Every structure is written in C-alpha cells, then in structure tokens.
Image 1 (cartoon, rainbow, N blue to C red):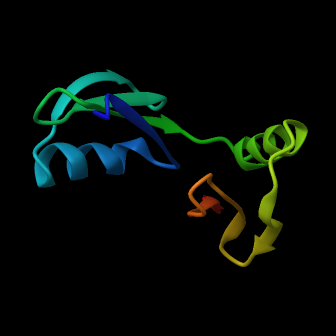
Image 2: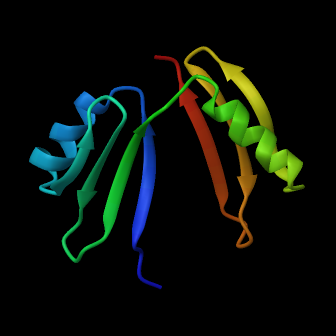
Amino acid sequence: MDLDSAILYSHDITKIIPFYRDTLGFKLEYEQPGKFVSFIFQGGGRLGVKTTSDSQIETTYQKIKDIGLKLYTEITEKPWGKEFSLLDPDGNKVLFIRRNA
C-alpha cells in the first residue's frame, strides 16, 4: 500500500512550517495562515497539518466510543494535557494526545 497522505494536528503551525520545510526539506504546497498547511514528500505523498482545538480529543474519543471500538485506556487528564488509546486490528497501540497550549 502506498501512503497518499496523512494529517497531523498542531497548536502552533508557525513552528511546524520551518521544521518540515527547512529542516526536513519537504515542499510547502499550500498554507491557510493559522489554520492549515500541506507539504509534499519526495515521491508525491502529502502531509497536512491542522490547528487543533481544545475539544478535538474529546470529540474523537466520543466518536470512537459511539461506533463501538474498544478502548485500551480511557481518556485521562495529565499535567501536560489529555490522552487515551485503543488497539488497531493488528494489536498496535494507537495513542491520542492533546497537549496543553
């Protein structure tokens, strides 16, 4: 399977741009200032980065519960933010994290 694209979430896109563009050398494809940016990998794959909202993790958590997926760990509040996890069909732990801004 060839990966076409992936999307990450960030609290500060202005810090993300120089890292992926200048440090890793990905081509900046599109920027919606403060909201979204996309980069092109060598070979044509894309990486999108969206600005996260404080409610993003709760919304994702509830959606996963609503469709009946089994959680590995419930959502928990940490000093640095919130997290929860589930296991994918291969048994890999997928950890969802929202760091405090």
